[in-house]
Image (cartoon, rainbow, N blue to C red):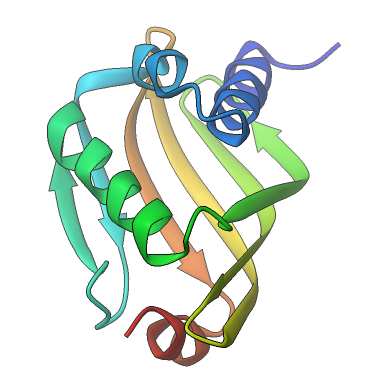
Length: 129
């Protein structure tokens, strides 16, 4: 049987893949803090639903809706989860195929903080810049 936080995040990623941002946001705490590494236009810290939704909008816009995430595995306990993923996207004749670890802090059934750790941050910066 999967840990409840694993099930929560699987539901979140499935909703994201379907473009169901209502479900995604219902899983995020109102004050979620989102950390995107690097130096691209998407890099920075984003706080709260509005800023995170704006980030998602930029990702979808910049990738022409091609951005996708494939889960490899999820490790979860009562406070944290790590989601190993492969992200893909296309834009301006460039392709992104990146291995990442998404590190989550969870509390009371809500995602409260997110860190995106990319195996090749230079490639990700080059793609989004």
